[in-house]
Length: 371
Image (tube, rainbow, N blue to C red; front, side, top):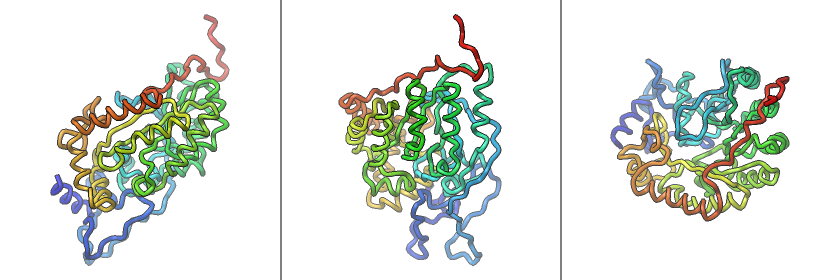
């Protein structure tokens, strides 16, 4: 596996930690290079750091790119993720979480899962109009919709474009239940709207906390808010009457698995009432990005962590089997599951969120049913 990673990295134009001409670490970014887009027949790569050809370095400044989307609500077929439909006003995510499974989906847009994913943010400005059109369709039989099923709806772009706010306003108008997943305190800008929706039991918020170690968080999720701020956000939303929970994921053996009890306890004390977790899996291009990141940031234990992940997925770092891919297998994965069950029970965090109320759904102008 290690030889395969090295050969692939060279093919992609990445040489790792060469002593001579070592590239400067791109602080504030998770990925340190662009992987090849698997859908492209041709691509450009830097084959050798001392090549005579002039090489243009990637521009890692954040760019916002308008895209014309035909729809905003997508059906989710996976039984592992606990949602039926999702909507994402942005593609790509400036948070730059190195482990993010959604990186691979960025290739469908013609970009790389690496630096492109976190520096080129696609903005669906028509999202609120598309959602309204979707909910107006007479065949829509109301079920909860998840916001951020792919990328974080409260990433930094939201401060500028306010598309998540606009989507919530449409949901509130229709009494359409929505579950939000985020790791950004920017959600507090919409506390007033969330409080109103919470009064109708049509909203819940799942806050992701992967580590309370700021040194780890800073390099693993470089453009996210601190764990302390996420806990304060949970507390503020809970006090406002919003149903909140904590997502512990991904759990990475040898990096953050030992933090699970502390995160569960802190989230419970902040008002969280439900929880979920996922086990690390490195699908597609993510395995190359994560392998590079791991060896650059934790060279003393990189091989150990890598082998832990392999051991938990039948000798590979990814498993596509439904029912197993998000939980892992083997002794390490079982220890994580047992720890999760023990401490969520101890601190009273139900494994499932409270049901959101779909009975109030109404299209504007629609009369209530008589019987």
